[in-house]
Amino acid sequence: MYSPEDTISTTASTKVPVKYGELLVLGYNGSLPNGDRGRRKSRFALCKRPKANGVKPSTVHVACSPQAAKAISNKDQHSISYTLSRAQTVVVEYTHDSNTDMFQIGRSTESPIDFVVTDTIAGSQSNADTQSVQSTISRFACRIMCQRTPPYTARIYAAGFDSSKNIFLGEKAAKWKTPDGQMDGLTTNGVLVMHPRNGFSQDSKPGVWREISVCGNVFTLRETRSAQQRGKMVETESQELVDGSLIDLCGATLLWRTAEGLARTPTLKHLEALRQEINAARPQCPVGFNTLAFPSMRRKDTPDEKQPWVYLQCGHVHGYHNWGGHLEEREGREGRLRECPMCRAKGPYVPLWLGCEAGFYVDAAPPTHAFNPCGHVCSEKTASFWSQIPLPHGTHTFHAACPFCAQQLSGEQGYVRLIFQGPLD
Image 1: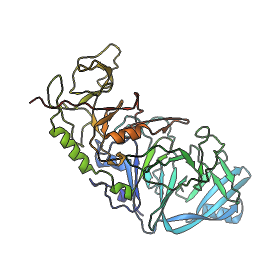
Image 2: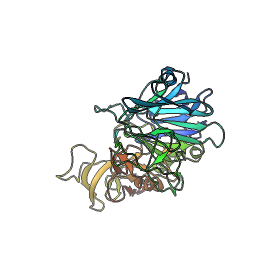
Image 3: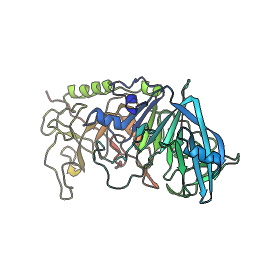
Image 4: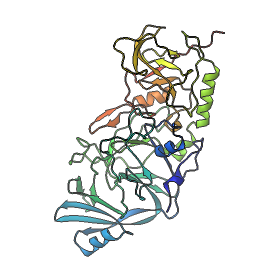
């Protein structure tokens, strides 16, 4: 059996030997404190896998017929069951498709799932602290079918096959018969997809969120995430993934990067060179006059002595200090309302962390801007892009968030330009 671990990219370069592309989970800042173990939870490389055939629909059976019962009980036969009522179920039998590879994503740790996804905790650097609430991510959330021949097109479908190679849509799930007599449906919390306009580049703009059905059809969003009434079908759009497509599973959002797009993405080696270039300029705290330095990519959870801190209201970069606090400041060092000694602007005062996940960058420009309020640093175009992206939150709201930690952005722009002071000598 092909192990999901074999597809993980642990190289420093984004020019990974993948056939199709990679899935990255928003909210994970690349090189996590727990090292490669954390990276494996946050990204998944899709490679060509021998004998990992995809599937395609073949025969429709009415439940209770011998053929339907055989399709459901046969563990070598893929099938989807649509329960219309207690007395009526339609079973669609699927056959192997030797022209495609199938990769499955979901919360389940069973063998059919290639990429196990857990709920993203906003502001967390890892998912070691599990949530006590029940996950809203489906155990078998979705599947991606990739063409084995160029241009290696990847298409997404809601729901995944379980260990018995079945998909069951219960009586309460949204389902219907199409004009051509086929069945289709939606999963409980849905699989949403957004394709950016102008690709994933410095010219990218937000697209429109759509919902993908079990058969891969595209629909407008439901009134709420789990409403039984489906949206309107959008026949002019496709479930084909493009570089930069976002996939939301109601609890975690994934970014799809094609192999071609990854080849144009800055590498970790490039980001490390930019970090060293900033540190080589010897930025100083304008008050304490001590030299500041961004920590290495393999950083710790807590800021070190040379860590740069920023006043998010104005962008002035300092070293850490205890003065300038106000009565309305919150508990803890981070997020306090402080008065900048340079310009008297009052606002949050937080440590700066480099954005280490290269796949989230839309260009290779220097890291000059920081997200508000988390302090993750990246290029201006990258900060501008993510500040405009409305990410699903809960069952019916959307907000922009930092891709490196998933914290909701605040302030007028959601990010700030950093103002460093050079050495006085």
